[in-house]
Length: 369
Image 1 (cartoon, rainbow, N blue to C red):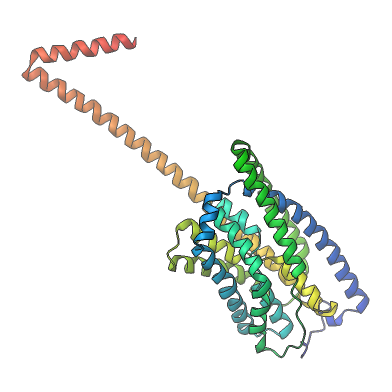
Image 2 (image 1 turned 180 degrees about the vertical axis):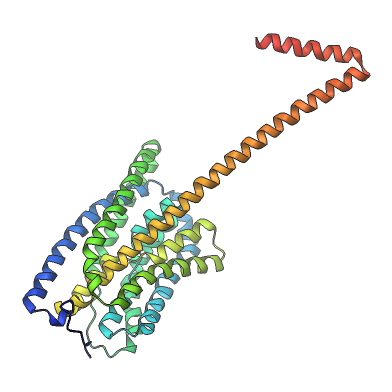
């Protein structure tokens, strides 16, 4: 495999001494370990709270008629690897960087998409089903997709699929959600309180992840500009393509939002683990910042989508309230005009009936007093 020629800049890993490179990777590894532990704990709490929104009947309906899940899996393992391949070809990436992009494109959906789905009023049952199914299917689809798309490069390195990480991810997803479903079934009132707290924790989680992503990905400023551009374009393209395919397959609007968010949100931890298992420290030094920069832009895209939706939701709700208020005023005015016209008609045509109407109105007013 041919290696890339680097400039004389110290930012290039080939110009660093072996001792400095190992020290930098070790420091990065410690920060990433702390980051992943905090993320796993907070994510478990959030998934437990989101599990309180899951309806067992709707969940079973998605399993019996998995049209939404099928569209989501098509996006996850049909579109995302293909988009990754096109990006790698378009930017003429060297083999080591192209493989990193492909690994990320072949990774399953990340659990952060469940938080995004909640805040845009998507289908939470479908979101959790898609995340779980994509993680299970990754056991076979990740090596298959990588085998198909890596044939374009002269790459002899053996890629190691992180089956252990996939299993841990499934446990961290299924167990908290199962507890949340049980709490929602057993104590529905308490589950609403837990959901509100979980929503707040989810917002804090997004802020923590974003800040940590900025700190961890600051080294990516010294990496390839092509990888930075791809890390910005890739998640946004996934959201758009997922939305278009969901609309073409005539999914409901809630499902369209869910599939779109699930498609663009990849499992960053799984990609990072696979890179570390498959490559030497020298090769990892060239590409370890790519998953982190992708995750950073992924979170920023999520923040943008949530902000736009919540702003639109509030404006739309305010307009509906103003319309209802206007309609009520018009109806009250119409009723008063109708009463006035009726009394005027009675006075002109039937004086006795008019007197009766006046007496009834006086009785009503005195009773109110």
